[in-house]
Length: 192
Image 1 (tube, rainbow, N blue to C red):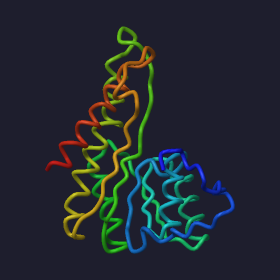
Image 2: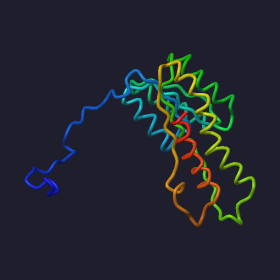
Image 3: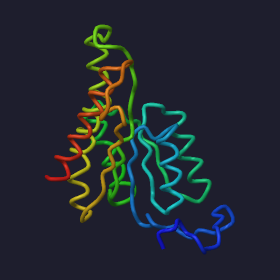
Image 4: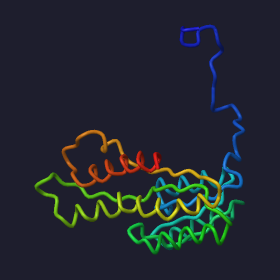
């Protein structure tokens, strides 16, 4: 009506029951950096939506606790140690999904690391570390997952980038550059 909802009763979403569980039923998802923070939230949500989840992270104890929590809550999850800078670890993670659950449908390239610093304060080690974790990790994960997704008949890859990939910031150099690489890599992967 163009009037911003004039004439309608206001809606209180906090009192409405939303029945959308099961949107990922039958799907298998691999989440890098899945042991804590945003990755753990993704793992819990995916499990709640019916997916079986492979939690990949270098934080072994926390990752195993999360997988146990999801399983105790009625979901399905396993933990695998995953250093996103290692092609062998990525291959093992994809194999864990296929061996444990028969397929891989979703990859969430969530793992990331931050080191700040202006250009003149950024060391080569800082630059390499940021690109290894934030950009190379996304490449290695995608490269390992695509054949499994083809075997499954398709899939979805979610690459986590950042607003700093699109705007300049004063306190960081390598992180925004690496996240910018993720944006471009996402586009070319979609085309391919």
